Image 1 (cartoon, rainbow, N blue to C red):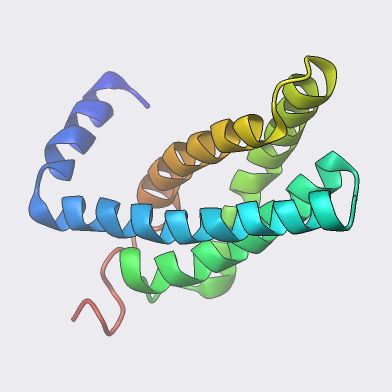
Image 2 (image 1 turned 180 degrees about the horizontal axis):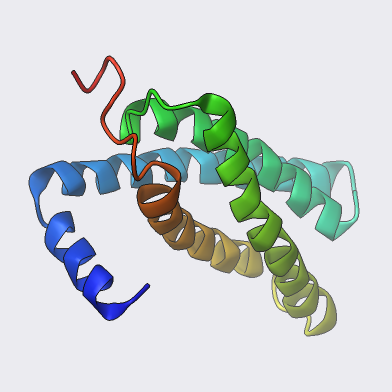
Length: 149
């Protein structure tokens, strides 16, 4: 993101509407994080699936949850659902292989704690996805659904 856009984003963030949007995104992301960690623990500890598969399945579940609530309540978009899902899919086509690779390298090769590595990826996901959703996914359809009116 160019410096001018970042500066503009920070100015906009300070306005109450954007601050509230960021807070909603945070809260829905926390709920998605609980789903991801719970799903990961279930798959990894109880079902003993491969580590990367446990991470991937839990990530997909949390993304679906997060997409559904953020589209309706955070970004309040009435834009094309298929287009929005396609843009989220595009984000995760880049993020998922990178995060799975990072999970494998840090936890599998270097032996870092699996939950610490998952938390690092979740924080990265939170920041990157908010910026992507706000400025790419919902840029033209912010606050257009019935809740926003």
